[in-house]
Image (cartoon, rainbow, N blue to C red; front, side, top):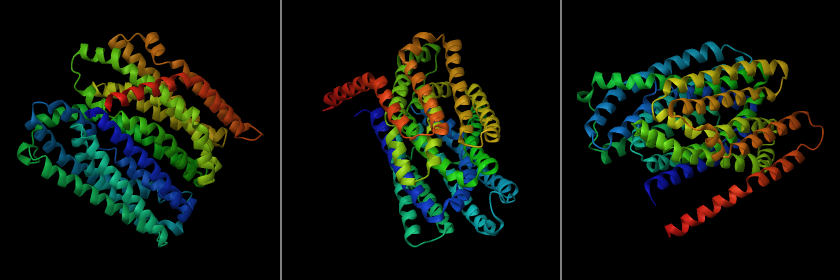
Length: 492
């Protein structure tokens, strides 16, 4: 099995296990702690989830430049790492302080989100989660280094271990009827274990790379900063969406709906995340494309293949298999609001699977200013439409705004390919079978309207929808299965 396929296998395996375990732990936590208390946990932990993205682009930058230097410039990688690690520590401390400042001034002072009698308890929990964030933040540095070396199999195995440790800790907390304080403490312990594993492997297996103050160089740091600042803006705008949505739901709608949103979000993003993680190899592959001809060749001969598979992937998981996911959410969680939100979130995620490869190509070739602008548009559109939507509809239909922003962003990315590399857009869209994605989107939107305003059995439209999607994508599914069997025969 070649390196790309090995990496893709472990990335996919990691994400599948992570998705399954996260669903199990989410179910256990909601039942154990209740919708209200765990809803507060979700809102507060989203602050540190957002904080994890505030690496000022150094994580992505390390991946890009380690990939670029690894062939013939080991010393330069040592310079890159030594110039970045100290900034990671300083930024981690700064973000920890800012996170606490935000929480105490926005969340803990808002009685509609955190009741006064729960304030003291959640302050303790929040501080422990903050320490866990800091350790995870430093772990990003080592994780990015290994991914830059295309050691996705290694990072995936460590992530799988982390997932099982989290599951074990949730089981222990549930069996012993511990409160959220002990859950937060277990997260901190697991974060420390994972960090130490990364450090041990780096020290023992990769001795040719150094972390030393003597390798610190301002010139290298300036180059990294020039690229990373725009990457950071892009990451910040993107990462703000999740905590923003949760805050607006809690403030403008209902705090008890936050767990329903979290369930739906985890399912929707887990499906697309499997695709994203499997093809995470695109970033280091595109980072080494330096000339116009190399990049143009990648667009014309490889990019459309990834995008075409993204359309098929969306058709299978958000179309043909939508019914099983809905039935699972209904019977496993028994929260009907989560089903509607899941259908709505399937709209933007279906488009994201198509555009993910384009996004990573643009990131790999350094178009970070453009991508930052896209994420800013996404953030503003989502915020405005959510506020307006909750005011007008007072239901989950307000989340349609997120779909609109994602659609705009993907159209603009295709336009960028046409302007910069003379992409033949009609041929490209025809090759990726974009018309099938359009049919999927229209059908999902229609299903959403039926679900909100229909007065009959709400599962009937889902049955019809899944059958229709099977008819649309059946030929592509058969073609994919045939290719898969051919590869298996060749391999064995």
